[in-house]
Image (tube, rainbow, N blue to C red; front, side, top):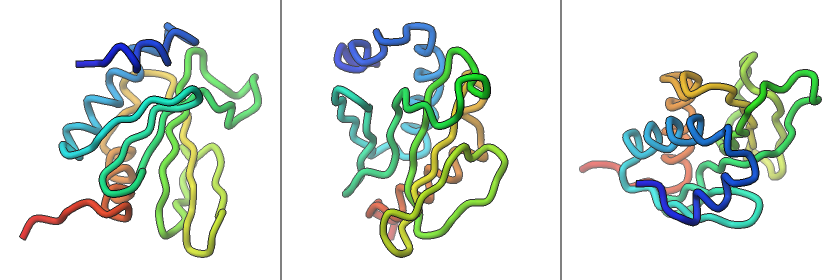
Length: 129
């Protein structure tokens, strides 16, 4: 169930709500222990540490962005080379931040969730014994 805080954040771009709903559901299915924290500029997903965030960061030029869109950000210990990645940076050695633009609910797919799941593992997700 989406919280009032999440809805407050999405009031900035209400047309992005279906995209967020699909992404949120997929993340919570892949990482059921994830916690969600809403701030002014992003919605963050945590296990031990933050592993993903959703924002309206313009990771591409306006003409190259879908409308509506959400930017999904995730961190890994390696760089992902893929056409879906809008921007990548290495803010710390061996810590890569990736930005993916989602323009439809269908884009919260298995490929994206594999990266998100790996990011949750990197962020300290408890592994089954």
